[in-house]
Amino acid sequence: GLRLVRLDRNKLDIEINKVPEQLENHQLSYYYKDYKQDTSDWLMAISEDGSGVQINGNQWKALQLNSPYNVTHYTILEFDIVVTEPGDFHSICLDENLDVALDENPCVSFMTPKDDLFHMLTTEIEANVPKRL
Image 1 (spheres, rainbow, N blue to C red):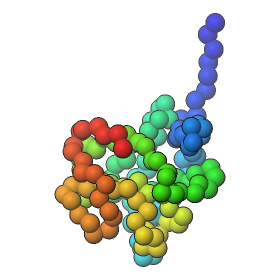
Image 2: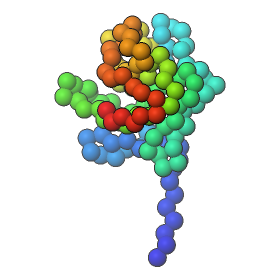
Image 3: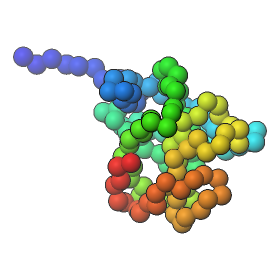
Image 4: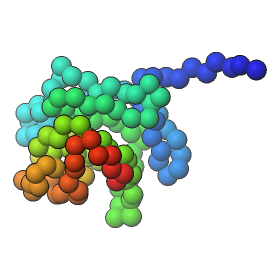
């Protein structure tokens, strides 16, 4: 028979240690040396199926994990990224606070062109070319 299943379109689906989780869509803003870097007029849009986010504009956003996770040298972070209009840099950060200046490279960054000013280069990106990292 037909069964309707309600999807919560306001949550992001992730997997931690092969266990599915949903992150609440409470978007927090990042700071750099006490100055708000985020464009609060823009929000990340979670896809209808909860499998991804669309980010437009200069956003420095954070989503909190459901419980703390201890990142080690053995931690593997996997995600797919498609950038349609490359900016100065794009980053995924695993951070304990919302001030980028307080940590030493908590981010995986993708840049065009190559630039080591704030973050360690992980890979270069090309417009409209999907990458699995």
